[in-house]
Amino acid sequence: MKSLVRWDPFRMMRGLDPFDELRSMQREMDRLFGRFLGEERENRLWMPSVESYEKDGILHIKAELPGVDTKDLEVNLTDRELVIKGERKAEKDEKQKDYSYREITYGSFERRLTLPEGVKTDDLKANFANGVLEVTVPVPAIPRAKKIVIETKGPKQIEATAEAKKAA
Image (cartoon, rainbow, N blue to C red; front, side, top):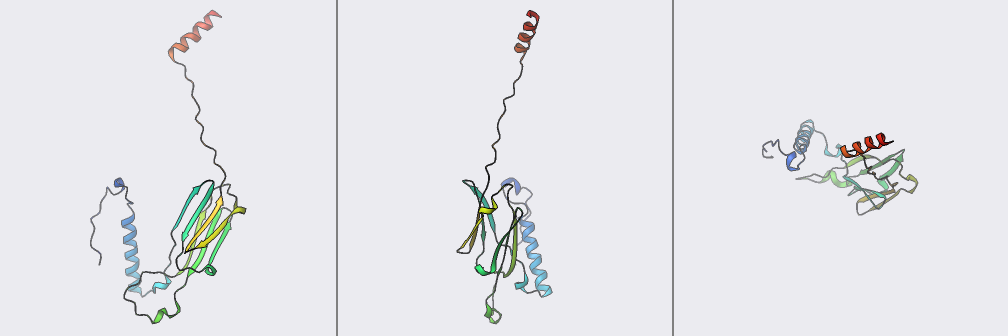
């Protein structure tokens, strides 16, 4: 059983995610209701962890997919949306095992990621090695912001302009 943790309203100020506690509580409630209702753990959904970053004009998207076989994995592209689908299958003789503890979740998953506008989808590549799917796609250069100098007229410039008008 988990110990009680005092709620800290200043979590966000210290750089911690204020919703971690709520997510943890939701997972615990889901687990308790699942046990109460007799739901099998194999039927639970799981979502692979995903990260994306841009380096040298290439967008890299990585998804951790341990235990997923290549034949059970799909990468699709619809408009500007990258869809990663797959299934992590349980071992066949798993039913006969007498588990004392089990956290690994099996089943189907689907992740949808919106790609930036203007990506060259024809050059999209996917590579799967060591349980990590990496999708790469070139992205167009984003125009950098340009600082525009604002000209102002100070009191001396206004006087000089007024004197020039009188002289003319």
